[in-house]
Length: 194
Image (tube, rainbow, N blue to C red; front, side):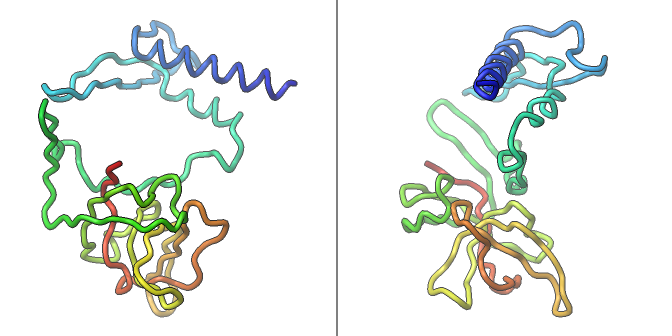
């Protein structure tokens, strides 16, 4: 019962924060007297417009204390496509990427719900090990499976042979076997289109 009440309070608070962040500017900080700046933007045919700013972005730690370790922040893909590379118009969207490639997926369920067979992706060929970051989705060749695998980089480490990557499908219970070297990585997913 206490858990249910706590969840309801969190949902209510998040709803209040969302509406407050969008409609008003808080005149007093909510926690500890510090500034908590959150920028809210709208993207439309005219480009990005600033809607409002509020002092609430540092509330995340408060809410994270109520969330299980499993649901805590996880590494996201690297910021491959910068904001200035995306142009939104009324009749089209232009993403300026040099040497981009298109990719489709098979229905393996290993990356559900992020990637499924109905999704399309834009990928880039990484130039070096430094281009690969924890959180990135990469396509690679494996010694233990046929075809190309697209999984998330969960660790980047080094051993006596050099840099290697540990991969895992988001929907898989365990990490992929083996150490994946840079020469096995073919591409990095920089956009998923549904």
